[in-house]
Amino acid sequence: MFKDKVVLITGSTQGIGKRTAWLLAQQGAIIIINSRSSEKVEKTVAEFTDYGFHVMGISGDVSDYNFCVELRNQIILRYGKIDILICNAAMAVEGTIAESSANAIAQATRINVHGSIYPAIALMDDLTATKGSVLFMSSIAGIVGLPGFAMYSCTKKAILAVAESMKNEVVDRGVFIGVCLPDFTENEDSKQIISTNGELKTIAKRSGIKTVSLDRTALCIIKQLNTKRFLYFTSWRGRFLYYLNRFFPAFLLFVLKMNRKRFMKLGGKPQ
Ligand SMILES: NC(=O)c1ccc[n+]([C@@H]2O[C@H](COP(=O)([O-])OP(=O)(O)OC[C@H]3O[C@@H](n4cnc5c(N)ncnc54)[C@H](OP(=O)(O)O)[C@@H]3O)[C@@H](O)[C@H]2O)c1
Image 1 (cartoon, rainbow, N blue to C red):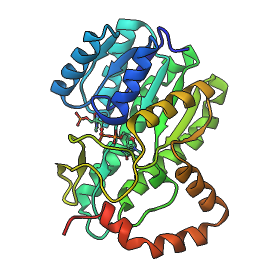
Image 2 (tube, protein in one colour):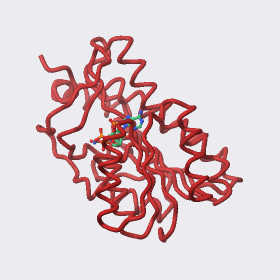
Image 3 (tube, rainbow, N blue to C red):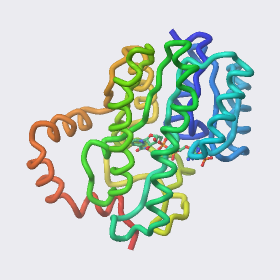
Image 4 (cartoon, rainbow, N blue to C red):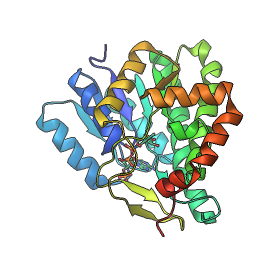
């Protein structure tokens, strides 16, 4: 299914993006590794190459449209096509909305929203040529605004809306659009988040909530690409939350209100 497919995964030097890249490379895909840090890209490319995987590294910021055009040009120059784009690069955001600075709000929007849309539009004609796939990464926080996760929820809901529009806009081009909504997933020690003042900071491994493994999340992404389902959840909790929000939205908001302190502790600014 993935043999010799050219796959770009944005933000693939760690976490979900890297694990998905690894599993797809094992199935014979040609992987384009990307993230802002050229050091991390080089290190990841070396790791993959050591295993005999076919990879190319292109470092740069996907929230910069000009870089996305450059990214597209380099892929087409080298491989002549692109089959799958996984818009994975994004960052968690710390704090309640009242604690967030204008800078943090702008950063979150730029990285999580612009950074998902720009690669998709830069590559859309090439994806049309291969009748390829675009997979956006939303989150269970994109189903409903979670207390303590306001800006993250805002950006992840925006991704869902963009994908819903795009799905029908490109249907005649034969391009598959999907949105994955992962549950809280185990994070790497190197995970960074946007802090309330807009600067990036490294966070510790998550505690206080059950997380889904990176392997399970990556396998769900691959299953979604195989089955071409528009929405995909990585846990029963995500699916349950989605249907609860759809059929009983007032009840869900009540449940979140009752659990607000727990959520705000989880996503909020450490005191
Ligand atoms: N982990 C979770 O619990 C969870 C749950 C639901 C949804 N998700 C979504 O799943 C995706 C991956 O999450 P994760 O936890 O695996 O992320 P992560 O560990 O924080 O890794 C993010 C990756 O994206 C890169 N990146 C960030 N901004 C970038 C930019 N502007 N341009 C290019 N690369 C950029 C980072 O590398 P550099 O710093 O070198 O750029 C890194 O490789 C995200 O969309 C996230 O919102 C995650």
